[in-house]
Image (cartoon, rainbow, N blue to C red; front, side, top):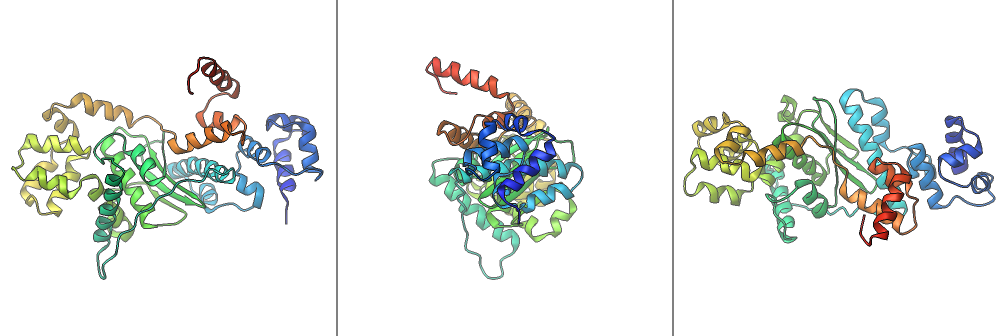
Length: 367
């Protein structure tokens, strides 16, 4: 069985660097690295964090030699899914490393009692009601602000958005001590929002405990798979709460009122029409009529075109997981990690970030 030293030596061999250059590459003292490799002194947690980050491996692999299923999946999947899995592998590795340093992900699931014989759609709706109660308990609203931030703060899930080509919507990944949702950038903000809620449904339901890929959340296969039915029902009930819909329908639903409701809930006109039909709040004729409305038409009818354009622009921008960023910075501030992991996560040079932090400290501000 290989040791930590064996695994570090293998990384040094793969790099093609001698000990002195490898030590510089991983931001360690060469004498200190030599003593650790020879067993004279042990590798510290900070040492391993530096090596893991510089060599793009996980601390868990350095400590145990085991590779989580997410890594294997990233190596064996092709196309857009492979790119998404590679990004997810990086984030889950960072999260695992932070747990080693004492910064565990604050995963807060909710549960819903399952009635005997209930359909998968009914299970998804029940889980959504439980999730909405937790959102309300924390004084938040599903219709206000960033859904990604709300999910991070309420349920403790890391949420990332990465730039990918068409053909991939999102994934939900579960590793030891890690819950991650990864979305693709898109010109369709309502689809991205629905995908985010859909992936949260997978995590809360405990689906596919390693990684769940959704290349097309509205594809034909979704309608046949029980887990997808549940996740879609969860997303619909979460984003379009029954209480809000019944209140909106009570005075009657005009075309302008429908457009305003689409904008308020930040969903697609088709998704809202299906939800209202499913709840028997409108008939099939009205549903077909409203489905033909586009999101841009709804925004124009509601006088909220500027708001829609802002949301569309935002959905095309990558997003780092907010919780992961804060915990990585906290590890550095506590002296449990060097600045390198924080800099590489932000995508900036170490020296550039150090200068920025020092300048803000001199000015009495926060980074």
